[in-house]
Image 1: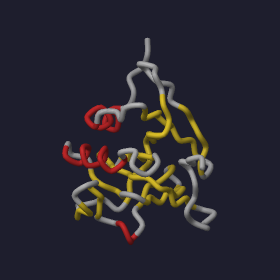
Image 2: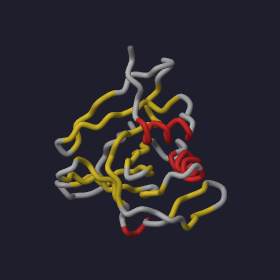
Image 3: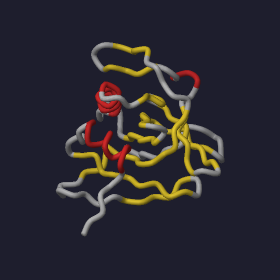
Image 4: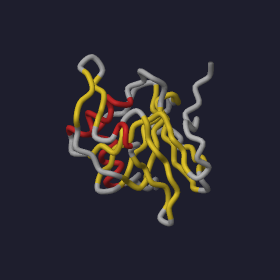
Amino acid sequence: MNYDAWRNYSDDDEALLLHGTAVSVDGCGLLVLGPSGAGKSLLAIEMLALGAQLVSDDRVWLRASQKGLLLQAPDAVAGRIEARGIGLLSCAHTPEASLKFCIDLSQNSDRRLPFVAEVTKLRNIVSVIPGGPEVPRAAALLLLLQNGFAAYD
């Protein structure tokens, strides 16, 4: 069976319920996609330890708004994150964040400066960073959410 990062687990035509994890820095959200066991929650926990806020773990709503795409937690998983080998942990969370970037742990790139793909979801463009073969460092993703990409001269 092929992995589909954008599989919708909802019948809602106006929103996507995704298998993923989302964190936020000052309202700027990062959506982490990847198959089970890829390291989505671990990456989020590392980012939380550095000051990010949890939006949602395991399932994430992606909804269109007038300001762009929003990340939100389904009620059933709000304020919880899985620490593999430890258990389900309670965690402070923010109810929503504006999607700034997406990282897909199922996509590989051997380039030092990987190509950021763009996909259209709910009539909005999403920038998708390949996350493999190694999960990027949490600190680098935190800086990305805070400052964005640097311009290439």
